[in-house]
Amino acid sequence: MTARYRRGMPGRIETLSLKAARRVALAAQGFGASRTTAANAGHLRRTVDRLSLHQIDSVSVLVRAHYLPAFSRLGPYDRALLDRAAWGPKSRRTLFEYWAHEASLLPLELHPLLRWRMAEAERGDIGWRSLRAFAGERRREADAVLDRIRTEGPMAASDFEKGGGGWWGWSGAKQALEWLFWAGLVTAATRKSSFERIYDLPDRVIPAAILARPTPAPADAKRALVERSAAALGVATATDLRDYFRLDPASARTAIADLVEDGVLIPVAVEGWKQHAFFHRDARVPRRIRAAALLAPFDPLVWERSRTERLFDFRYRIEIYTPADKRVHGYYVLPFLLDERLVGRVDLKADRARSRLLVRKVTWESEPPPDAADRLISELRLMADWLALEAVEQ
Image 1 (tube, rainbow, N blue to C red):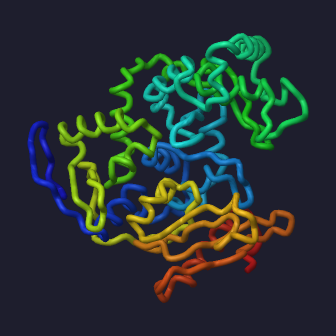
Image 2 (image 1 turned 60 degrees about the vertical axis):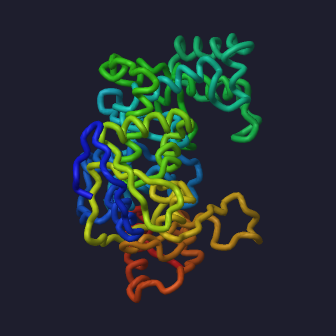
Image 3 (image 1 turned 90 degrees about the horizontal axis):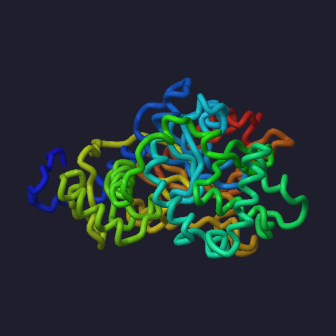
């Protein structure tokens, strides 16, 4: 899999064993390299750039999900580095918030590649159905909210209307703000300690050099997004490539065909996969992967559940919203990656009042390696230290 394909060169369909596909995927995701003892801003920036995004989730039973992918790959790092990159001073920012896979932190360089999505949202063509009215008959409400931010500065939804609602009962102002955010008319200036988003105008948050970059045609932007997806995944089906940035099937098919024609993507057949797959021309096929990592439920290695099953024979479902008496593995369960396998699941909670990392349940897959338990203990201790918790408690 080292050949370079030229535009117009038909080539042959390569075959990739399932074990090789796993190693390709793990290497593309940043696993297998030795962890540094002191991860800095440069390490973090390269990790986010490799993955193209960190998904955001509000659950904080352990630590908020966007902090975990870098820890899984780098080991302990200062979470303040990520906070500054995402929500720090304008001159220091390297990330911005927007809808990508889901709500995500993305490198600023991707802002022009997502403006087509902002434009579609402003027209009311995409976004949650409950918000689309703000593109039409409720536009005056959205404009009034926007005018207040323009005049008064950064504001949260709670600054408009106090009380009532919460996440599942949004106020009118919250809905208007969410539509403005989809449409790119406001962006996230920072977050409150409660993790509530504070909105401001893009030109007061995003560096001028980024906003001044040309806006590519939608087809060109989607092609670039698919290429980034392919680089982050290493080897992937069309569904995998489309899912990474949640692109529509038709646009993804066109982008994939163009990238194959240009030799960026190489068609491959992966052992045991029913769907055709595509190998990024710069992907590596390591001889082996040596890694140990606890993975967030929203880590890009495992977030597409069918891909996780195809790659690792590991059926994973998050059970946060499952009634307690019906949960199989636990509330906040992290898959445990050991070398080239997902060998177990660990239900974790940070008991901050007692300074303990609580291991509520460990479930092993069949025939875990003999050293799996010891290496898991090492990862748990590493995580506890990273979270400034005094001990691991099972």
